[in-house]
Length: 309
Image 1 (tube, rainbow, N blue to C red):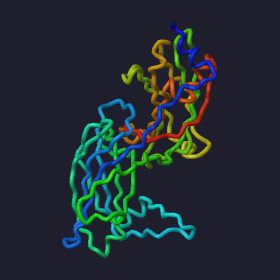
Image 2 (cartoon, rainbow, N blue to C red):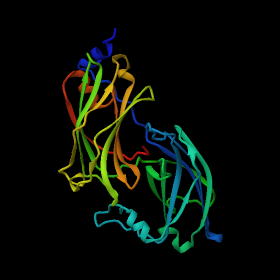
Image 3 (tube, rainbow, N blue to C red):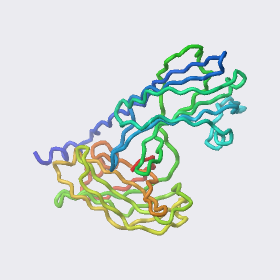
Image 4 (spheres, rainbow, N blue to C red):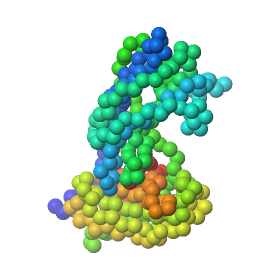
């Protein structure tokens, strides 16, 4: 019975990957033209994208109201992409909710108001961001959307359920080499390579942290060597780490195990997370292949995602 999970993963059938449900924002808008007021109410986010963290993590919503921004399309008719630089140039009004506990349905329940003249109504953008809060009280954006406030008729308060795309910035990649040894019951990650990292200008060093969770509870934590920052880390050439991360993983706990890999940068006396990779033993493609080819090193490149650490 001890090897049932191995038998299941060694046949041709794939273990189904859980279907990811897109987050949804519940929000209400109102524009009172006579008073030049745009009012909005942030209610909640359902299907909140929660990833394991090493500390108690809260959430807040951050809204940037941008007036007078161009919404012209390209000659091909494509909608213009509004960059953060475009927004900063227009001196946006920024609002944020109070901190709340993360949950599958995260409730904010806050009301905001601002002045918007009728001539500005057509070219006013509301950028809404849902953020995890890291241990230094910094916002880590996990979902983001743009809403032109003249999209719907909002002469009176009207509630909308809007799809809320996860935030997927290009912050770098990591190549991981993984092996599972069933006799010694160890999971080994070795010779990792990071590429194209988006680092703070004050970053002095980089290291990798691996954390194993079993059934949602933290079991083990290990670090690679800390290396002085090299410009190769920000290019395709990459920066290599050779220290092995070795986890004791009992066979019976394999189906419940998940490994979180953090790439961290040293900025002053702080260790800031650049990004992370989450690897579920049952649902990660690399882990499935590793468990079907025991004692064999399986390599794969993963794109880093934002993380509160």
